[in-house]
Length: 279
View 1: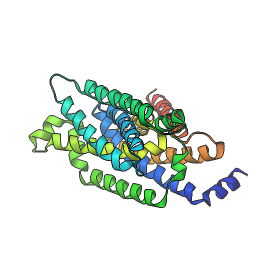
View 2: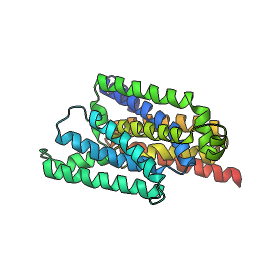
View 3: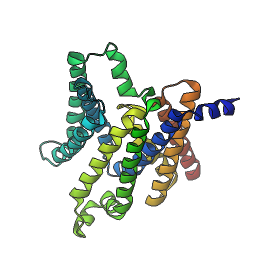
View 4: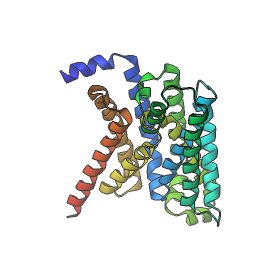
């Protein structure tokens, strides 16, 4: 019965669009997640997601039909700002992220309260923070846009794989070999900003970090080599996203939260497997 119901849902284009976009976003997030976790910079995902919320609030006030046109450049600029502040001797990296993220979240909510014409402000804010059914209302143009950006992100990661590997484990050695570590740190920050804007519709701004962190941490509990961790993280993240979307459709649960629960279950399972192997 469940398979029959699922096959009926899969006949609808919006369900197939959601699965495609969810798969692509999960893949991009997991690739970058391993690097961010190893560099102890995973909190940047959470910080930039708050910036994206503020940018989308601004887009709603300006009545911009495609909010990505506003959210994308603002979030990318915030990534650059966070890196610049992080290099300052007066502001530590974690403090820089906290300043930008909390400030953007507060300003975004304030702007929505002052200027929004929506009759359901609380619902709009809640869906932006925790995700909603907007992943099930994607148009074909938005799917193609997500696909193009995902291919670009994956291509950048593959093309600069060895340099990203070098700055992830030993930035000083990378500098000594002539690799411009600051430029590649900036590249990573910009790419994660792009992925976060894409992921807003999938899981909401407060849950985006789960897509970045949990698959990477799960992979590190059972595997040791960098390449195997990357592959495991990517595959498991995609499976969690697909399973989460399907479960949310069948059970009527929020898409974003369901995907995150799948990621949490993955992490707990890998953590248990790692402990059993070490015993």
